[in-house]
Image 1: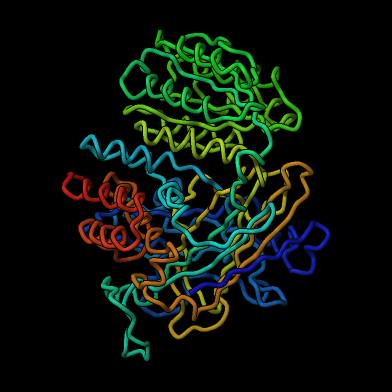
Image 2 (image 1 turned 60 degrees about the vertical axis):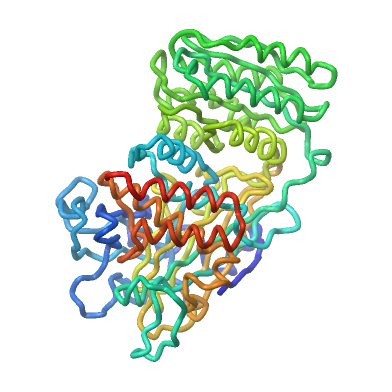
Length: 572
């Protein structure tokens, strides 16, 4: 099932791997990006993979570009991928695509997929909250990679001994084997022979385990807290105060915190203060937080970063933690403009932003954009249990950074692969030629994190040999020295069935279930995804999740099963 590999190289060693920046790219044009192209459609009808060939010829749906499309080592030469499809809309998709209809399309230009790493989970948390309230989430707030990465602790990826990443590549077929083609019978996969050449290919990236709290560097955390009128709703500011109080008792004596509140204006409630003997003072400052007027989020972030710079601690992890419903209605409301104000603090001092969303009405797009541009990540809390997990378990352990500007690039072999699509990461795409341009922003990753990318891959009938090579590149958080790790997989390792015992133990099943579920929620509102041509129904998906939860005794998977079950009876 798996091929796991580690290979770290510095900049001067990259030439031996045949992936020199810019090589073989001028003829393709520059600056074009891989996109995960999604097709709208009802789950009952099934998901349709974009760029599917409709002529029934069995030929490749890719333009291999002749002999220049490959390097001497047999890998596809780097070249920018562009979205493809019949004309009809500004983004290159046909009008029929938006109705979930099957269509033919021109082939992509190459076999590379490049994206910035992302450990956000807010989209899944917010969807859970919305479904608990008896309504479907807005499809525009559903990001499949955040559903998938919400189950990082369910993955069995190997972890490195030091900073950096391990790379695990595995996968499975999405339908039962076809004996008429000489394929061995798989297991109880039931998604039909329409899927017989389709595989899920999973790329798993893992950092080292988080150190014991006593061994990590000290933290200097500036909490920027929304106290606008909308935060008066139960489950917002009251939950924030409770969370901060519990976290104050969990942090070490040599950690420091500052508090900034904002409504129509922003103010520093507490300058950077060592916990030590000051916990009572910090609790008193938290207790003064009360909801007031409108939401000037721009003022809050600006004042928060100014406070963080004033309290900057050398040798500590300096981070701004934004707690808000992100419903900005006063002052600057554009994420780029807000972060432009504090760009020097981000770049010169390396202060990252961690966004924590709250509230039944939640400015998902703004919070996600702030975190992406602020070199951080987002999560969402809907109750006290979520808050305790974030502030007492995750934040204290994962305060440190192990990688900056981390990006991944997956190279597919045209000899074995007809089609592929990355599921999710829509707004994290990176131009292929920018993979090794360390000036281009990537993702900031800490200890204890995993990142999973799931691809739908159509292999050539009877194909054997190399399928894909996955490479992750990152900068050392202190020295900014670049490093890389790689992993590879062959066709034979993708032949196992999706619903076998091994895939359950590895975490591949929960990855597939999360991806299918996100796709169903997006499809219901005209968004739509492309996990595979014929997916399970929501009812079957709920049953799969329930069975997996029973077999693994995993609380997060049990919550996923319950969440899918809530969606089954809700109208689209």
